[in-house]
Image (cartoon, rainbow, N blue to C red; front, top):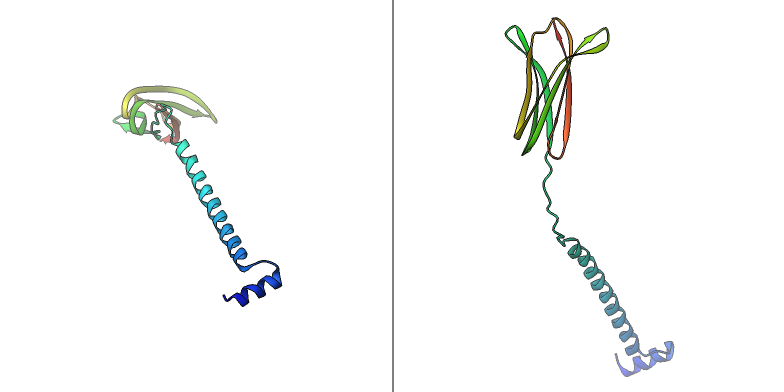
Length: 154
């Protein structure tokens, strides 16, 4: 800008053009500084969160249970299998109830414990014709699960 323009701007606004430019630059610098500080502050939270206080993180396992009744010759075998995705101490149990007039009458049960990724509790019995309810449950070090099914023997 020429001197004539500078003086006309000064006369109209009461401020020099150089002073306006200086204010714009300072505003930009201040906004940039605030943005940089906000960015740095957001990173410090992550850095503090990563501090290890001697806590060991162990993966959790997923326990699944299945149960059923299979015929073995003239007898029937009730079973419950507990499986997991990690090797750990597992427990499986199975209970058999006969449904008589709408209520359940206990027949037998079995349980098993092992270390690994699978364990099966089973028991063989002679069963009469009727409707039976099988309850299977299992647990590991960190979780547990259950399953049930109804079977009719003709």
